[in-house]
Image 1 (cartoon, rainbow, N blue to C red):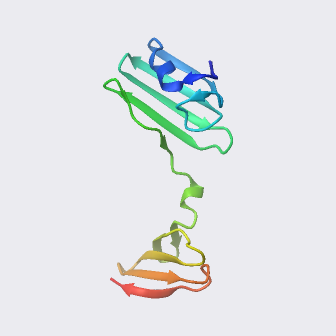
Image 2 (cartoon, helix red, strand yellow):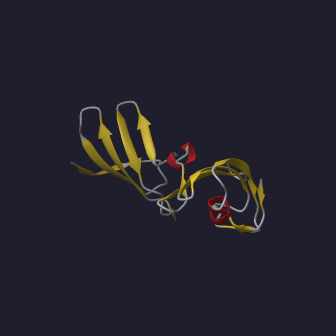
Length: 133
């Protein structure tokens, strides 16, 4: 099945019960990206799911229709989403903020249960303790 125009949710939602697969292009609306592939399952006239893959970057998306209402697209978390955000090394695990220029903060949990807030102002070369919790 190809969807090159119209709203993908309206098109999928109007299909009879069944499983469908295909692709969508930039002429379609309501898609999570300009181009991609999809699989859809229509369970009844009020319940359906669409799983889509953006063919430009491989991101996975899911949209669910329940009680006759389509929810928004949800994107799966990928390893690249966690790169420099979830930091694990010997003895600690941390969550890191995005860099603003060369500044970032990290909340780190040590193997001893200690919690420390760190800050870098040089792009991550050095980290200084802001606070121990």
